[in-house]
Image (cartoon, rainbow, N blue to C red):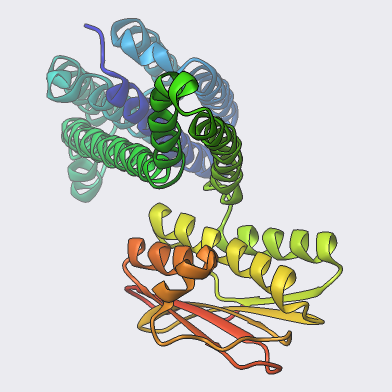
Length: 394
């Protein structure tokens, strides 16, 4: 029977754990035999067999975990090793320990169907125990202890089968959670890209298309209008190209496989290198959702551009704090300006940067505040609701 991928991962991991546990238990029993048995060669033979078999099993399961898809050959080989241990120790405690580990390995590979393996092992254990009791006269306590070993084979197999089933379900659930997160992130990324295209390039190209449609009919009748429309098409095409470049640049600002503070630090360092302005960052180690990360990185980029381009500051300070809200604050000591009560008024003067930052703050579920006075610098702060606090790290 072909095992699913989740079962292969679980069986290989648990198989290695069983091999290590069985080896530790058997080697402990054999090590005691080195000190108490009159002929230590028996214990040494067991040690060699167990070490070689365990090392081989670990290497095989580590390099070729798909071997668990073929449990019968694995179990046959392991059963031969069990018989080798039996012969080496002549039915001593190491054999019972090793046999219980073999049943556990069968439970990992076969599940509850491992009963076809556990029953023969238990029967062999009872046979060995009976032989030991017949050839010696142990105390009643030792006899009970010896007869208690064979049922441990079945119990070990059941426990391993239950553990393997639980691990399979856990791995499957983990895979589903990761896949769901990836699908959600991909959908969010597509939606964000669609919104960016709609808000920038799409609108510009729509205006260009209207002007281009009116251009042919105006060439003969209204040459001056045709000239204006041609200029509109040219300017619109250049604007669309510029907006596309800005969009691609914005999409590259945040690298999702890096932590958010690293992204912010990289942006601040780049701004300082390009402008010659001292830019410092103090931030908490947070991991906001992908959509929030993207909008905050775009807001920071725009705030740094505005500060350097309009404020001409000597120093810019960026802070990221988190309490009940995640707050990104950008302060510069530049020229400053008089902030209108309604930020949308700035759009009438072609100052779209702050308006765009406010829109991005709303897209992230937060709000943007701008504080400034002529000669006293500018502070841009965006706050977004979050779930838990974090410690400050610079």
